[in-house]
Length: 59
Image 1 (spheres, rainbow, N blue to C red):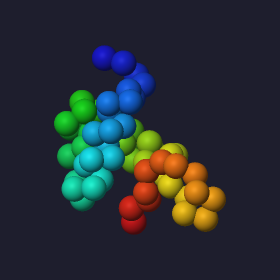
Image 2: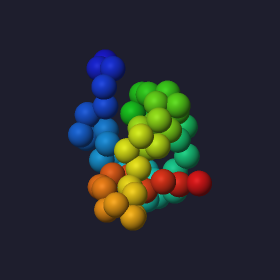
Image 3: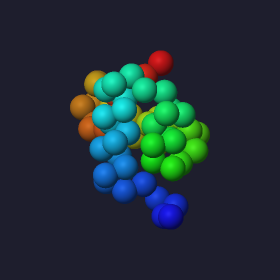
Image 4: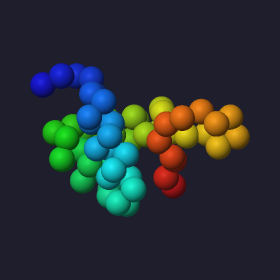
């Protein structure tokens, strides 16, 4: 098992967020801890002001 998230993992995270899944649910489907998913989302969140691509932050 790789320590890093793959492109396919990131696509699955994005799909899970669109379906309003919890970090735990997404993590279980990927075989990763929920904190890994949360850190990935916060680290690469979309910033509407700058237009930087990435995940949209969920609060």
